[in-house]
Image (cartoon, rainbow over all chains, first blue to last red; front, side, top):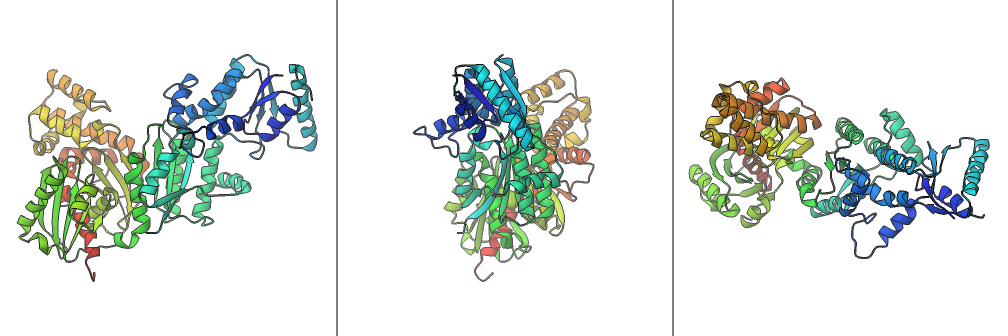
Length: 149
Length: 411
């Protein structure tokens, strides 16, 4: 069973697909849930405090906007523990959406730099492409080993 | 008091840990922040029609929300645009949205670029101005001072008081700010003495500036209002340009304001105060180093050539160092004074005037507007004839006295 970083990290469909094939999806929902459920913090809506962008300095320098560093404080630890990644390009907003393009560029760069297996797919626009899309993900996840649908 | 509803268009504050600060600043001025709800289809259509092809989805969402506000699909009293400091893509969107909303609606709008260090206190004056414009549009429409009123501007460097009667300034008081209340009391006494009236005769009082709450409470003021709206009102009143567009520039001791005004009411504004190198304080230090009174700095600068002296620092410490180096290298005090004025004007031009639409007349107000060298430097940069109205150093106090007359019973 591998820890698979999904991009967009907010995609519930992608997260579900990874889980169905027996792997652990690394998605935004889990990280954000951890933040929101942290007791004693009062920084709605995500319970991210000004300390989080400082934690993000591990992945992005101080001249990088605070919003990027704050996001990296969420996604950076996920990238660090990822054993594989699935990146969907040009995804529809309804499939999953990540707000900041600069963060998205940095995430993809760090994933590739880490040397883990990465599956790059374009978001399907037709039913036929959709079938190929799911098949490609299935094949990638099966090849990771250790899983089981 | 009814809540003012401020629509937030933003990218990044929730991830920077500052959304709480934005909410708090709004709450402290009886306002609430809300995020305009729009459909997914409207998001796609919104940024497509706007024509700015940005890559960040949060910015696309901000664009679509702005369109919904302008088209009246969503109701709001004011708009707050906030994006990360140092993000070029967001800066383009922030500026274009501010301009778009300003030109296509009557919604007051302010934009801000934040870091994780942004606090509710930093945002307070901006939020207060937004709510004032939304809430007190009728009061801000006042064009004539009536009765006998007092205006006090408790600024970071100086405290000013003005007595007005029947649309005339009849008394003024000006003192450096030391103890906030004492300075205000003494400035008011000076103004009363010059006017020849007793305090008990005053029919209404208005306060503004950094010490407005403290002074206002002590003096039982009828109006306690931030300096952005008050100074705009005072500026167009004194410059006699109450109708049509104008731009007000106020380079203060601690921060600078650039306000785009339409019919006496601010539409967009910026307020900066990151570095003292772009403030009146730097000119005070320059005067001190040159051994002249601040009132002599302006005429001195008018006789100098600023471009002869290298002074290219955003920081008051390094700016002063450049000044010392220039003097040591044999530059004349006139040239150094002119360079200091040019440096301050240039920083305000680069950092703030890019965020408001410069429309003539350009009116400079506040104590620094009396430094002719600074006014000239600003005029040169903007390529316009800058207007400095009479009593420009009393602008906040005049604006307060004018607006306070709206509180006279029966007025």
